[in-house]
Amino acid sequence: MVLKLEDISIHFGGLIAVNHFSMEIQKAEILSLIGPNGAGKSTIFNLISGIYNPTRGKIIFDGREITNLKPYAVAARGIGRTFQTIHLFNELTVFENVLIGAHTCGKVNFLGAMFKFLPGIQKEERELAEWAVQCLNQVGLLEKQTELAKNLSYGEQRRLEIARALALKPRLLLLDEPAAGMNPQEKKELMELVQSIRQSGITIFLVEHDMKFVMNISDRVVVLDYGAKIAEGTPETVRKDRKVIEAYLGK
Ligand code: ADP
Ligand code: MG
Image: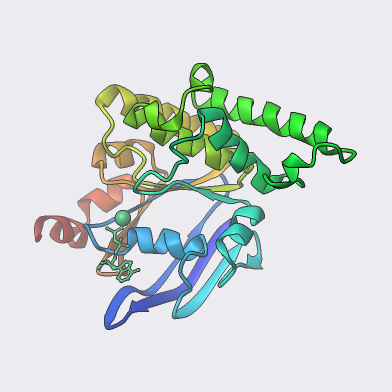
């Protein structure tokens, strides 16, 4: 088991956004979290990645508790993520955006990279740059490496976010609505990319609205409604579940 959420809740004032939620993900699984708008899906990603602290419950990653760790510490433990709304450094190049991700797992931080005269730093810088190039290649953006991030198409920006997350050498990757705004061809390429990432042994936790995408790619699906789990299982069993149909059709 890679990730375990144990009885997690979070309140925002009077709103219970996540309510006694528990789940587990196995190694190299593709698990999707689905549910109506406002169900609490992004909040669960924010809890795992340390942006929010749960009101109650525990989060365990690779056998160690990560509840209440800061976001950089969660990333350094090996959890990469993308955001529902794209978070890139628009004025930096594609390559630089990924290099920043690579520094999260390297010994030299991005500022430290300026002290190039210190022994060892040049070598590590070179290795990180090579690794960033490999990550760009994996998502098919190598030819765009000198472009500014803001000049990429929407689908390319989504793939750049994935490359940056991969650059920190995660063992678990959280993808929040990666197919949003993509055309059918881009979605097909994204599906192949996600499968290739899983092939490399990285566990995938996905939030996605596109049901065709979810049903095609997932090993298992967890369904959330009003912050609570209402169903869990293979895509086939979940899509026939009465509570799931009601949660989607009843709104
Ligand atoms: P989803 O991703 O499933 O669409 P979210 O996790 O974004 O849903 O939101 C779940 C609920 O929590 C919503 O009602 C949202 O308004 C609320 N919420 C999320 N983050 C905050 C916050 N920082 N402060 C107050 N309410 C929040
Ligand atoms: Mg969301």
